[in-house]
Length: 88
Image 1 (cartoon, rainbow, N blue to C red):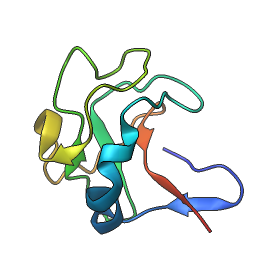
Image 2 (spheres, rainbow, N blue to C red):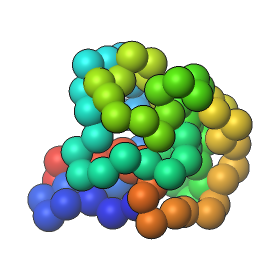
Image 3 (cartoon, rainbow, N blue to C red):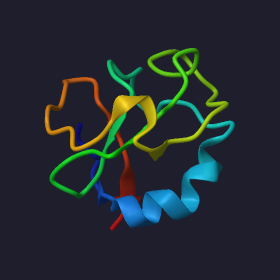
Image 4 (cartoon, rainbow, N blue to C red):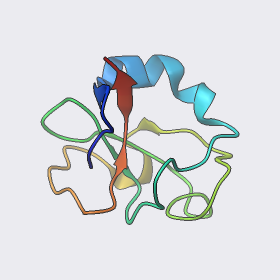
């Protein structure tokens, strides 16, 4: 749920435009504990839709989508949250 130095939470509007770029990538720091993606918005609405991809070692074969993985207006954040960070 936190971004590294030099980056901050990105918006869902940016995530929606670049989500296809997730294909082939892997988790940067550790595997997530749920399918929702934290963004700069106050609640999460994007998530990884496929259980065979979510919370497992990559590379990613599916991308975050609107309401994917049951993520709609989610406000709870776990310690190992899938987080969308953008360069400052």
